[in-house]
Image (cartoon, rainbow, N blue to C red; front, top):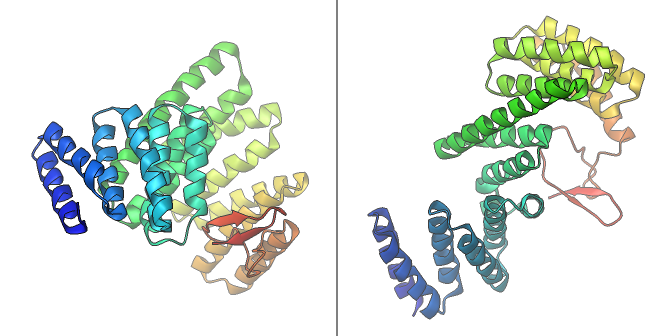
Length: 335
């Protein structure tokens, strides 16, 4: 089967699938897979088969086709195809609850940044990784991934991705509620504080500041009681972002001052870096240039102290969202 005929048959299958003639579509695509000698066409038809089996809940078959698609991508030696195939491997393993494998494949996708397709798939990668962290009950990392996915959805006006992220956030909320119940039953104060912090972060990510504030307050109260100063820094970072959403910049600076005192006391350079970054945004909005320059300098001092700079170009890492690759010597460089 030649390239043109392969394309025609794939389109025929898509028309059947969109007409709810799923089994007929699958038969057409399987014939293409068996007879086509065009690797790019085979890659595309495998993508159709993966999507169809995912929507039917046939996850083992989905994984089987994802493995074949990855082999095809390697044969094509095309980084765009390889990125897409690793995402399908991640999604397949996520559905089969192989969460560690999901995270590993998602990281592989992110390490292949710079390809044309990677920018389009970043949101889906973040969503899949978030679902995996949620399955492992690593709530803070799950929320961070969901927030990234939501940003990609909003920036690209991707309503389908936004819908899927919101569904995952709903599951996230449910699981934290269960964790909170367990924490209350066992009198686990550190876990209660963490759950309240996660609840607050979820509401803040939805810009529901009025609901977030009381949860931050409750988390802060427990963090203070148990002496978790690092947790207090995280709470104050969240409170600061809430004030920034409300454009209450002076109140945001008050929260930053408290967090900065704690971070300096602990020697928590990453916390200080985040605080200087927030200050930079605030003073840029307030057009206070002297203070702005001061925090830009302090931000870069933190970058230097933690060696958060690219081993190739020398630019800082952490000032904005960047995709990175680690060298065997443990240095990082931009992709």
